[in-house]
Image (cartoon, rainbow, N blue to C red; front, side, top):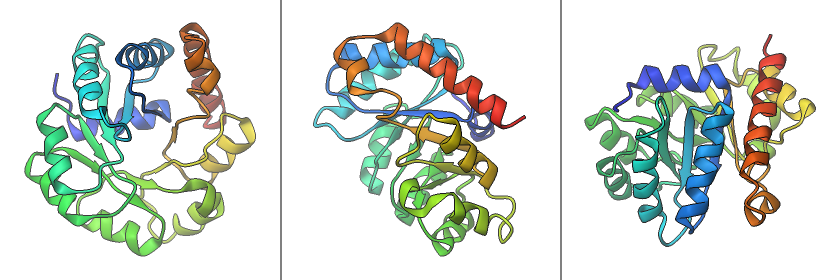
Length: 220
């Protein structure tokens, strides 16, 4: 199924959580994707950090096709060539830790949602001017919620996804959402080493459910 940009943005906004995951084992990767889905996630990012990430992504693309409403994208993309490679493999969206405008052009040509990583107001406005509907604030642990709350009045219609050090606690999530974040991306604090080592997929599903519930409470 092909999703529109608006469907992806709406799903990110509705749940408030985008899991980020990278592993070189296809079976574990599939289990994580399915646990997140059954926990309520509808937007999932595979990060391009392993030697076989492309093969893992192609496998998960097939898995996601059997999970109604699951939107699967690729992150840690750094250039136009790799952007095109993953778009052709079926990525619903492209996420980058950096702002590189050649990627914007490729995504625009293929009508694919592009989410660049930014850490300054100049980068954020530049990304927005080049078609980024959602902008990744990275690294979140460095810029902090105060940065988000300071820039929102300047560009009030921003849709920001915070990644990098986001924690599954009330205090941390509350700080980001109260500052104006649309959603958060969560990696190792969600799919912990213990969960992966112990194949605790039921525990991961429960954790996802708890985080989504916490986010819902915060945003009431």
